[in-house]
Length: 121
Ligand SMILES: [Cu+2]
Image (cartoon, rainbow, N blue to C red; front, top):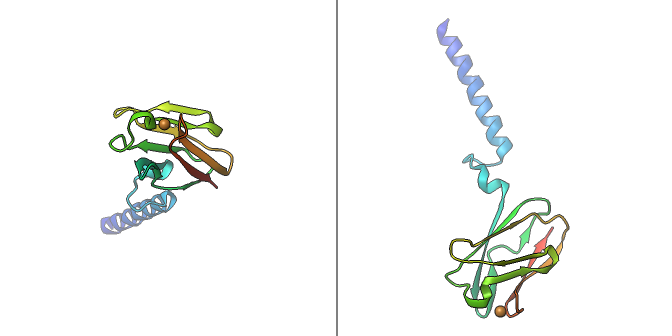
């Protein structure tokens, strides 16, 4: 009798875990990365380099700036269409926003020396 209760409970627990992990769309259950679009911005060959060039509208985007390669005035980062302007430093190197409108957004240094595009779909 007790054996069947344990088996029954086991099936229910496994089912619940299965449904929850399906809902997450993540086999590891790590929801932090699922909820935020994490991309990095570095500098090379005279320009900014984004790790991803396309993000989804309506979902938060976090750009982490690699201050090992992004130096000097390149740390003054502007996204004019979003009204974002930030001077990053080693311990304050993230830019977070939620784009609502699909389109092509320019990311540039405040002087326009380095520039790259982020496409929102
Ligand atoms: Cu510049």
